[in-house]
Amino acid sequence: MTTRFLTALPVFNEVNHVDRVLDEVRRYSDDVLVVNDGSSDGTTEKLAARKDVFVENHARNLGYGAALNTAFKYAIEHDYDVIVTIDCDGQHQPCRIPRFVAACQNVDMVSGSRYLRQYAGDSEPPAQRRFINKVVTGELNRRLGLQLTDAFCGFKAYRVAALQDLELTDAGYAMPLELWAQAAALKWRIIELPVPLIYLDETRSFGGSLDDAQTRLAYYREVLDRSIAAAHARGLCIDPASKCGT
Image (cartoon, rainbow, N blue to C red; front, side, top):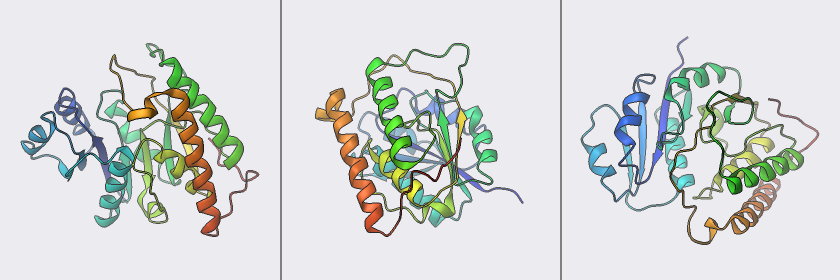
């Protein structure tokens, strides 16, 4: 039976990339959803001119996590089997979308990893972002019983039926911490798929004080603590002895 899948892109002020990225994504995905998270740089107008993608507009910028949550709800409401999430900043390769869909046939989540293997031409990651990723990935593995190599890659595929069990509340870049905690508590079947490490010469803002690496790391730990406590409050047991393999 053919897998019905949706590719979703959270977008905020990507006027320089959006058309080129969407043209490439459409080569590998018939159904494409863009969640326009309150863009104000001309992205909205570019999306309005396209007739080959679905668009969900946030009236104001709500955050990366909120955009993904909108995409998840859309996939559930429209009865897709799998949803692939990919960033719109040119750092993910759309040609890999079919591999993520194929890998998601017997698992609940396929998570891209930029550190599972090396590719020729891999970028050198920004030092602070690599440090935070390494620290947080280690803490997720220790506290949740996971075996991850990359906690923050946005290139993922999800079994849509599994998404219905999530209760995600963080609207920002810390949402993956909440997701990992719930996925572990729900005993999701998780695998990683290697992707090239591509960083462009652009600066990402995580929002206000979170642009400071130590402040961001402290906040991520706070979200992880809160997410584990919330899972326990729902009666979900996170047992580090129960491994989700890569």
